[in-house]
Image (cartoon, rainbow, N blue to C red; front, side, top):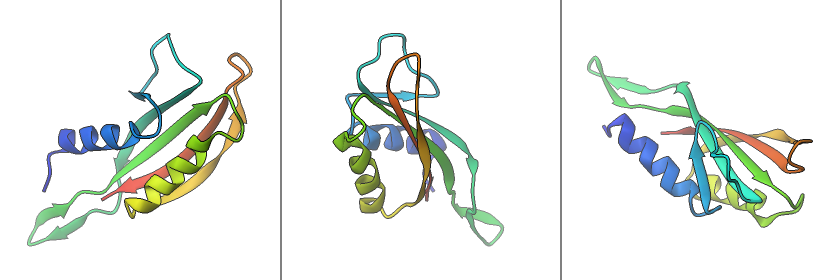
Length: 111
């Protein structure tokens, strides 16, 4: 079984293919018109055998911020989650009035 911190690094690197700026928990003050913030929520339905955890499934929130409401990054997130064969759901979007960016949210599980 992989170390938890190794899995976090893999998630971060995977999302880096969508936007140049990827943040864990919060974004720095200087942000672009396309960036991602992700955060683990906890453990989901993991797999056990012989009283040992064989595979740990991590529940993660992915937040994409874009200026263009039809930005290709929106589809790129979903295509990436499908390509990685992850369980996911689109949780919706909203306009951030302070920045003018559109905020899209997904929940997913990394096994």
